[in-house]
Amino acid sequence: MRRPGTRSAIAAGSLLLVCWLATPGQLVAQYTESTYFETWTDIATIRDLGERFRYDGDYGLRAFLSTADFSQIYLRPSVRYEAAPWLRLHGGLAWFHTFFPDSDDADEVRPWIGARIVGPRPGGWTIQNYLRFELRVFEFGGDVGGDTAWRARWQLQARSPDFRIGSAERFYAVFFAELFHTFDDDVEGLAAERLRLNAGLGRTFSRSWRAELNGTFQHSRVDEGLTGFGLDEGILRLRFFYTIN
Image (cartoon, rainbow, N blue to C red; front, top):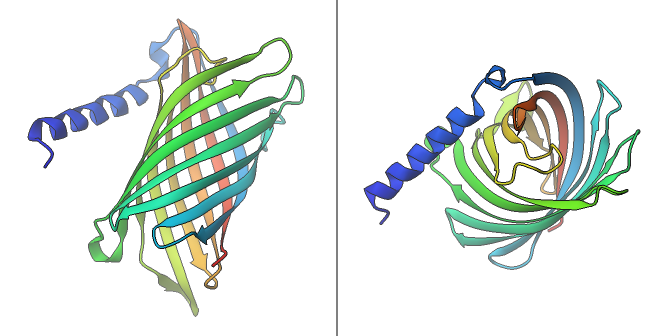
């Protein structure tokens, strides 16, 4: 059983992280703010590998619409292990390639491990906590070279029970809040503290196919000594899920 002191330390650490992410950018000298709109689309494939193991892989495209600053493709295969009905262990390897119109393209390789706690289920809703640790390995091209950074992310998610819209059935809603913390702060302006809020509507079409349309607000903050910048992003994300077996 977890000791009360441990629970208190976790709660205090979470509160400090939230307060840190919420600190106004105006407290930093020469702090600039930008706003962008993006679209993301991806397909996730799911295949059972046995009684407890499952393959999860998602592949997608991300792009700015308000400017032509960048576009990005990614591959993110992973394997999930159901250690208990309430605990799922997760690990994978991601590759991101970013296209820049005015500079060299960049690559990122991202090995990661995570754990998902499923439950409770009040009123048919499913509450999940997901904690992930990632090693981000960057290669910027040209004379810039590469760099690495460790990052942690924690997501609190709620998914509704299925409901109807008119005569159509098997809709569901999904909401989550996610906090990101980067342990290295000198990676070419990419080591951002980040908050992501999401609301989505999904529908299951068959045993194999479902889809989600998500609206996401993302705030990122990069501190670079006495300078830095904040970035607010509105993201429209269309996700497809295909279960192979």
